[in-house]
Image (cartoon, rainbow, N blue to C red; front, side, top):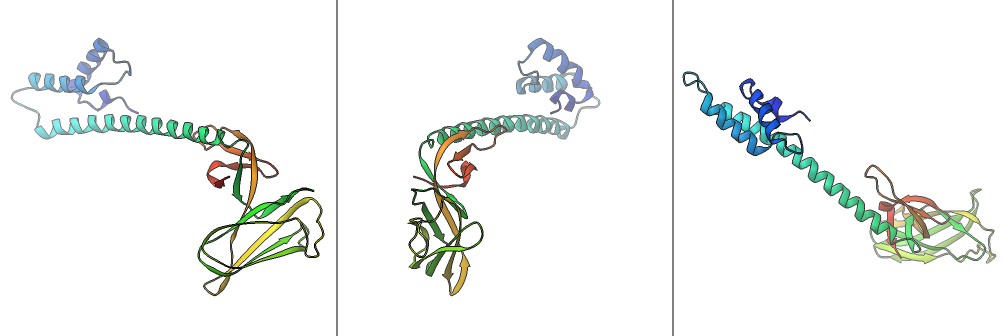
Length: 226
């Protein structure tokens, strides 16, 4: 940002520089009290035959106020950003060891697990269906839930296929549809996963949560903490 001294008329610039050397403000910038003192000095020393118009003085004050205001605003934003980042880091650190609900179209299955899942309805639905398929695209199981109200609905998959046989461990696809206002529409599905660790990002970016069997996800993408 330009030094406010550069915004002063030529007659005041040398006075401002001398005044700055005397007071030596820690920031190195011309302070408001110094600026007003210089303005008064200019008034006392102006040519009586060619007085400066009042509009010129107001313009100088407005210029100084703009520069000073921008500096203070930037400092406020920097302070707010640092505070928010610290708050996010603290919030993320409390999630380690807990489980979260994250939007996903796939679900990992190990030999013993029964994945905790959910779907979300933007409005009441007359019919909800969840199709679970393997990585080759073959349908493994279809779950029906009938009518449901708007909101988040929890459910679980027992890991069995349509014939009641336990399927092999791996990653399975989720496809959910619902009848909304008489039309079949795709809806979002969510999976539950434990938080293993947290990575603190730089540059004002939100922390990243590292989830078991899912990987890294942004803190803002968490639907619910369990």
